[in-house]
Amino acid sequence: FVLSYQEPMLASTGSTLLRASNIAARALGAAASGAVERTALFDLHNELGGKMVEFAGYEMPVLYDGLGVLKEHHHCRGEGCSSLFDVSHMGQLRFDGADRVAFMERVLVGDIAGLEPGTGRLSLILNENGGIIDDCVASNAGDHLYVVVNAGNKAEDMEHIRALMSEFSGDVSMSYLEDRSLVALQGPGAAAHLQTLTPSLNLPQLSFMSGERTTVAGVNDCIVTRCGYTGEDGFEISIPSENVTDVARAMLAIDGVQPAGLGARDSLRLEAGLCLHGHDIDQTTLPMEAGLAWTIAKRRREDAGFVGAGPTLEQITNKSFNRKRVGLVVEGAPVREGAEVYSEDGETRVGTVTSGTLSPTLGHPVAMGYVDRGYFKINKKLSVKRGKRMLPAKVARMPFTEARYYQGP
Amino acid sequence: MLANVVRIAARAPVTRFAPVARAMSTKFAPSHEYAKVDGKIATLGITDFAQAALGDIVFVDLPEVGDDVEKGEGFGSVESVKAASDVYSPVSGVVTEVNDVLSDTPGMVNTEAEDGAWFIKVEMSDEGELDDLMDADAYTKHCDESS
Image (cartoon, rainbow over all chains, first blue to last red; front, side):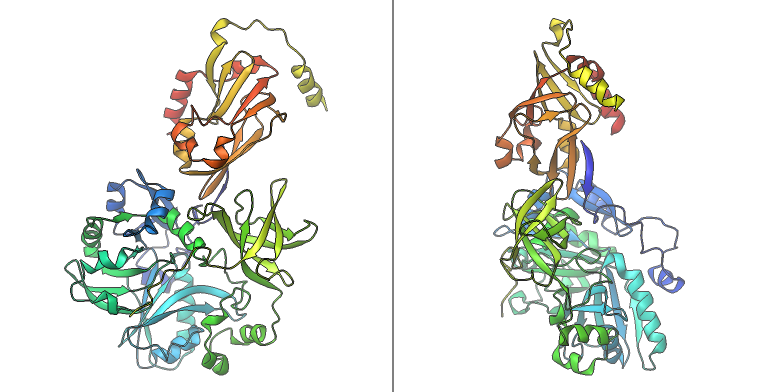
């Protein structure tokens, strides 16, 4: 066999990360040497049989020996089960200063001023054209803002933010939390499992997208946020790097917790209809056509104070977008990023697939992609080209699998 | 054009002395496909080494009975959750059987790659092509060197 296609997520990304400006490079504490980084859990991954690959400038486990992508995927959705992912490659940022909210409302499209303490939301960093530089989760941590950005974009995000800071006359500062690691514990069993390690945090009282600073497995100064990238109930837990291995071991020692790698992370998020920046959204996609206009609250549409507001709001107000991100269910074989989408009769090219796989949970191919105006409607019949074949497909609602986010308290 | 002429000539019935030792034997291609030979019929699949490298197989794309296959050319693909791989035929000939069970249970490739999860059976047009393939020992050595 010869590998004819590999998910770009796994192909070496050559580290846009390390092509950083001096400022960002200093913030990261890394020389722009092209060297691949390791998270604090690297040794644990090897001990667990992690198959290490390069992703976004880091050596990360794509799967674990003895498990594999399918087992890890299924486990994450299993009754009473939870999966532990190392996501320390992502960027954890902190914003301080009296004017931090006003500043972040320049950077982000969302309602940051309206975030109750201890709550967060998905938001977008846009460029001047309204194109998406990154998606992130921004949280109100009381005396500061806590923002988590994608690994592959963190250097560029920080360069962009620094540039905006230099034009901003208020009181704000940004820190890159380089001494912190980040793990995700996701699955129907995640809350019960985590509760055994967080005696002072009442998890049934922690609503979706809320967070708290607390002690986890005896380690102080952790941040637990009820969010994730799988469609299941789950948590992202920020842990001081010097203690993360101990916390991870404590989690893995719980009956029902298994490690999971980037392979399963990607198939889970696709089933959940969640975008992967660099594939489903990028600097050429504006929020409306990307299906993410909901991140722009009414008040923000009125103040239009965020970078990229002009083109973004124009697209929303005038419905001037000519393509839209949709879900696709395909018959016959999986289709992958780059596959061409055609009209039902196969005559007219109408779009492109941006992510696709064979859904382990559903047992059939699912994909995300952009299709032209006229082809947006749910159940609209299409075809997708695979080699010489034209596979029947249709526009489908996302998420493909049932969302099971926590509905309480 | 010349290449086509050569190819057609190679496809014409060739009288060759086939040693008895070749009647039931398994040969291997460097690209990790195998050919289990029984008379004129070669049963093709990917090796255990290949399935281990590919991870969990979720989809197998195979030709149909009656299709031609060509030595060195792709005849199908195997897909994991994350990646697709083309599979190359170690021999030329015509497909006589397709292992349909793989459409319902592609995961068999991971557990029985060199046994029940064969892909296709081919009636070979040139048994001489088997001489270009490796025997089990040579293939094992090849795998050790690739690891």
